[in-house]
Image 1 (tube, rainbow, N blue to C red):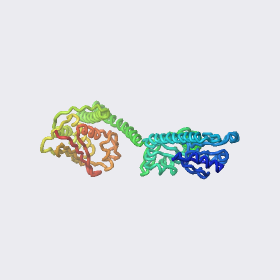
Image 2: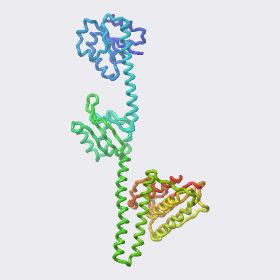
Image 3: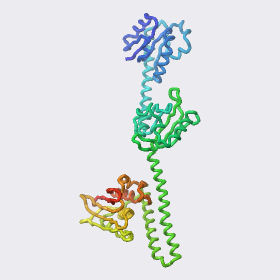
Length: 464
């Protein structure tokens, strides 16, 4: 039911108008105090309008953008006496004497205008909710350096709910102490008009105390007649980590490519000067060349995997036969490093469908990884067996073990461990192992009791 505020100075005129509006499914309010209540249309005469027009103006401003129509009922003689400023609150004019049919028509039109503006605002709010409230990008509005608004995505970047931040905290409160001076300076320049936009990547502090990386974008705006900063927040933690890993990888790649080449060139020069050491030099040159060949093959394999260009040449084969071939190929390395390598064959064959070259690559990488982290006098044990309808291969070593915090990322591409024992190398071997095993429909896992306790890699593949 629509509510009509009837502000008519003369009681008899007020009674007659109220009677004319009866039966129209309207609720009629007739006191000035009702200006603070909810109503859909105000019908007012000239004397009353002169008294309350400022209150009406404020009320219409509060309701905006929804229309709050005002219908002025006045005599033709009084029209010219109305202050021009007062006309700013009036939508329609009804000249006395008032005809009932005309009154009903004007009221119906103005109420329809209000309903249409309410529906338009509802649609705008719905669109706003869809675009901003449900956006995956953080959207915020700052006034006086505090959040006047922030959407759920923006608050979620820092682990908060929007209501925990709005009117309580500002951007600076969420930023790492070392990065605050830079942001504070930008915000001050924005406040004084020296800077139109703010764009910076900073470290933020999550509610749980962890550090994140966040892109902050902002542009000068106004809100309720006050200067404001409106913009976007984007969580770029993953991007920053990827950039860091990329830079670390490129630095490692440069080192790993140069080291074998330096050794090869050095021994070539020594062999030219001292023919007696040629056999030793050839052995060392071969070892460095093979090391570099394996690294280049890993790089090529990663490239094929990333770009989806790896095509498996699947044939029927026996997993244990492929394993024995890889073990025999690495026996010389075991002897040179004084590491005992033992095998525990399965009691039955392990028939699988596999790309033999890629499966040898998997086993070689696992053995190479074991050699890297096993000291002289240590042991590497390779065991094959069946488990239900799976072929299983274990590669266990008594080496340095893996810290618990590094186990979740051990197979992740470009994930560089922080342990001092394993800072060198490209760390491509294990990511390649996982990708190749999964392409064969299998699974690879690792277990370690911790630093100094060795570790066991387990490859599981479907039996043919």
